[in-house]
Image (cartoon, rainbow, N blue to C red; front, side, top):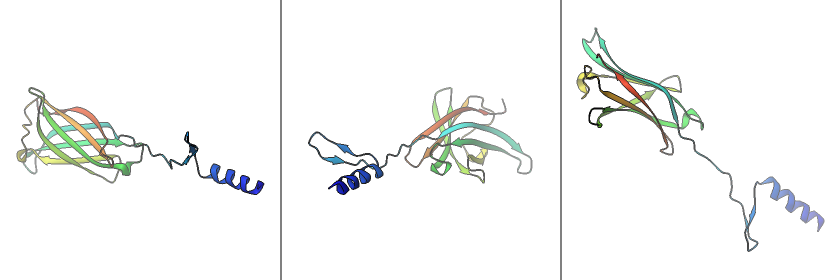
Length: 145
């Protein structure tokens, strides 16, 4: 009988927490996972003129961290807003690079709704993780004005 009690004690302590409800039933909740939202800790949004293409280029940079590991970050977007009236003008997808916390994309401004001479754009750099949790950093679009 003492072996059975010792074996029961060993099994209960080796497998983690065991809860006993008011009726005396044992419950093992299993491992607990806590998801952390990603964090956009720095970023940039700007217009630049490319002489070779003779065109304005929009580019977006985001530096992202996630407590669950950088592999938890699934996508990063740049949402451009007109601060004059608060409307969403356009969203641009950013792409991962060889540096796991750096996301980047560039676009021909002429193929978008963005005017590089307009001074009132704000950009929300938004990182989404596996569980659709997100982190945001807002920056101003560095336009020509």
